[in-house]
Length: 114
Length: 111
Image 1 (tube, each protein chain N blue to C red):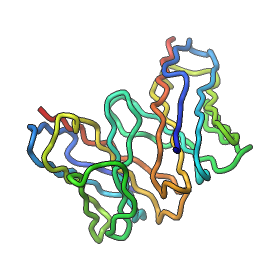
Image 2: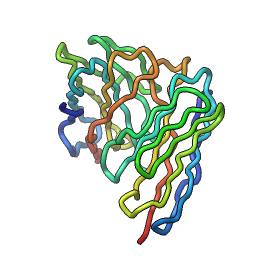
Image 3: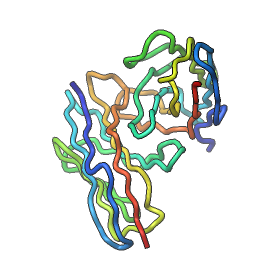
Image 4: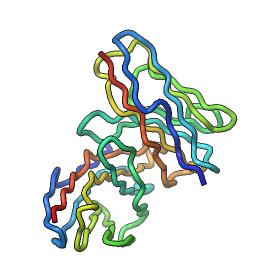
């Protein structure tokens, strides 16, 4: 069984640029959630995708957007990067989420904005 | 407001010295409480899911328990390889399927 994978592992961008992060969900999972984890903090929920539709969003501005594809893989796009966007970005997959389902995390993408 | 508080922030133990980590939560309808282990620079690794007060789960040296207001992660006779940050998260009825995390407890076990 293949776990959650993310790419790239590390990324350096400058302020104002745009970035796309990618995630492949665990086999058999059709729900993908994205989280942002700043240094020394717990992960913060960005949004979730189920059946290619956004299915819940945290307190993040519209410049954070996403996509889910028919094979359940997902992208996180961030426009107009700010210094505070520097963080570990985590993708998590779960079976159809009716509430209470365990989310399994990938290794993360470390983004540094200069 | 739904929130999760973990204590202590950091814990140093000698190998074999048992202890407990605390996760206090305030949520409007608990759908599930989750424990994860996170090594530096890595993604969280799933440990346990608890759904109702009184529930307990065990895995090797770890045991998680749940009450109506808090959860404990008990570590029995820890080894240096248990050193990591332990994260607690809840899923609340009014927050949909998002996980709400605490800041974590960083555990260091020395030999």
